[in-house]
Structures are given as structure tokens and as C-alpha cells.
Length: 316
Image (cartoon, rainbow, N blue to C red; front, side):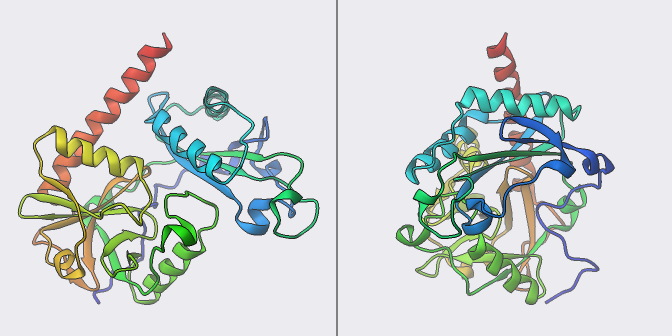
């Protein structure tokens, strides 16, 4: 496998010293980073019992906020986790936290909801009796532009995204050990991140993002049965459909992925990140993002601008 000077990930960003002194939303209060502490009895710390969302701030608006909230509230309802806040209250809390940090754009939020502190250090959900823990960490962040030129190196790993009856990948849960193990396996193979298969052995997703390939002018991604129901993933599919780009949600193998003309990852943080190689084998004959990836990035940038403008108009 070819080696680059340093490993990198889809969430690498330009260093911003302002993040050392950010203010964080914690259970209804906005507090300095040094004071944003939760109990060792918290369900999220103790068991990974919680859900989260990642969102980006563009020109004072949280892009695709409604889609993120739909996913969050559906996930919390499915595991009987009462957030204790409405979507409107969450929106107001995020805006207040952004204002406290003087953030208007190029900011990323990780909103986390856990079942809250437990009365005793055991598993049963009924031991969480004092209500949820709600945290929003906002950071100044701009994805590294070098990712578009270098791309991400993936390694296929033995860790798979499992069946919905074990832990449904559509839960954006705090229980991320499955993906952490996959990432470790990829790093130990000399890659940046992991390409994970589904239980049938078809190409599925990475440990952190959804995965797409381009073959002969067609865009392919997995069926969606075993992967995160990504907001950016769905936006890319919708953009392809709206712009006469053939797109397929289908089963396909490593044979087809490695032989692809292009491959890219989707996620809220990096939008679309090109894949340079899989298992040491280069993808396509271009450096960085290929022509289809660049076209989709431009369409997505326009979609973000439209969504931001629509949200701003609705608030007037």
C-alpha cells in the first residue's frame, strides 16, 4: 500500500485557536469549555446510551436543519429517549450558542442527547431518572482544502455494519465502537479510514461517511439497508435525479468499487470528499476529485445556498 507523509481523515480541518475558548451549550446553559462537564454516571459516558447529530452553519443558518431534526427525533423516539426540547427550542439554543461564540459561518455543531445521569452504575434505562443530558459543541471549522487534491485512502476491513436487529446503522448513536474498531483496523493496514462491507459482503459505507462510486457516467451507492441514512447522502441522490445524472442504490462488490472511475464520501462536515485509493489500488486516473465528484460538489454548494436562503426567508 502506498504511504503518504501523514495520515488524515474526512474530518480534518484547519487549525483555529478560537476553539480553545469556545462556549458550549449544556442542559440549558451556555458555559465555558472548561466548565462543560457531565457526570461519570451519565448514560452516554457509561453505556453509549444516546443520539447525536452533526450540523454545519452557513451564513447564519443551520443547513438542512429540518432533515437533521427529523432523523434525531425519530431515533430518540425509537429508543424511548425524551429530548425534553422541541425542534424550535433546539434551534434557538444552537443560535444562542453560535452568537455567544461569534459564529456566523464555517462552524460545525455536534448536538448530543443522552438518557442522562443514572442512579446506579448499571445498564437498565429505568436507572436514568433525572432527565436527559443535552450538549451542543460548536467549533470554528473549515475542512482542509488539501483533501480535495489528495483524497482519502481506504482499506477494506473485517468489521462490518451489522443487521438492523443487532444495532441498526440508522441510529446515529453514541455507541460507535463498531466504527471505531473498523477505523483502527484501517489505520493498522496503513490507510486513513475503513471501507466496511454489509453482512452479505457487498460494499456498504466507511466508518465515518457514506460511500459512492462512479462507473461509466453512473453514480452508485449501497442499497441503504445497512448504512447511516445520511442527510448529505440523500441530498446527493436527489441532486443526481434532478440533474439527469444516472444514480443507483444497489448491491455491488469490491471488484466494482476498485474498478470505478471515481469514488467519494459524503458527510455533513466534508460534503463530498474524494477517495484516492482502496486497499492500495488507485481509483481512476485523476488526481484528487474526479469530474463527476467536482460537478456534484458544485451542485451541492448551490443546494446549500438555496436551503440557507429559504430558511432565512421563512424567518422573516
